[in-house]
Length: 341
Ligand code: GDP
Ligand code: ZN
Image (tube, rainbow, N blue to C red):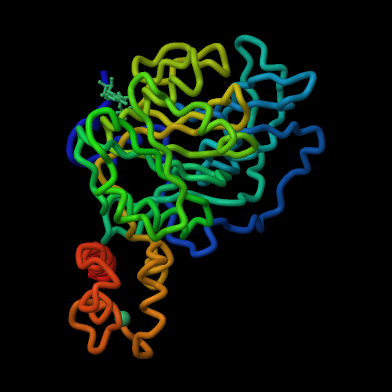
């Protein structure tokens, strides 16, 4: 059974998992801590594995002799901060992780990356999804549901904006040939992995995931949970059984959780969504996700908007000469106008 958002307002899809704190757009993605805080010299450092109703599951002493999972809450002074899956945090109090204990997060360590989305393209208010991921695994189905290039474009824009390296995993290649769809992205330097029922690309993905924190995103129904279950056996994401890493707690696919891949690395699974708003992104940065178009646009007149009505836009000439596909330029322009409008 696949998890579906309660309605078209899939903003709710993230439920308790994204922060209940809404933050204003910030180009840097992180905010410097300025207020003086008590010095918690005895704090332990941990990785936030999951967030559920004000409780943060944190792994401490990762890969060490005392590796353990601690249930925490956040300290009062952090109540206006978004703490998300992937965050590195300082924890104080009873950090034994023993049954019934509740420790306290007192600090969020500076983030290397921050994956964000907005409800829609006109909404400047962003939601933080995941911190400190260095790879974005875009999961798309060859069929059922039909792949949409424009959703992939959006993920790519978000990835480049956040400084996260994207890769594309095409599922259900047993149902359809993804070749024509993938042609949209052929000119990009983005790795593509194909996946099919009974032929999960575990060996191919293992070296890609090892040593990295990879956040998996995709439209609901593409088979993301199925793939994650194959990558991290024992974690039934679809039905929300006990978590493979923590050995406790109930994590359904409606929440964002970090899972340790047995062959190395972490995969952060996110709930399936129907849309991925980019209202927080500067339209000037969209071209970064269209490197094939960016090369051509380098020849545009200064200040070119690259929109359909832009005079002498080099993209038009490239379409006319057959250097660029018209639908690719259309997708780019549609996304650009959506953000600008
Ligand atoms: P999610 O919403 O992305 O997590 O999707 P699920 O993992 O729940 O999968 C949705 C449906 O697609 C399920 O019925 C799966 O059995 C099916 N499915 C997943 N992967 C494949 C695949 O590679 N091939 C085929 N034919 N079906 C698949
Ligand atoms: Zn142009």
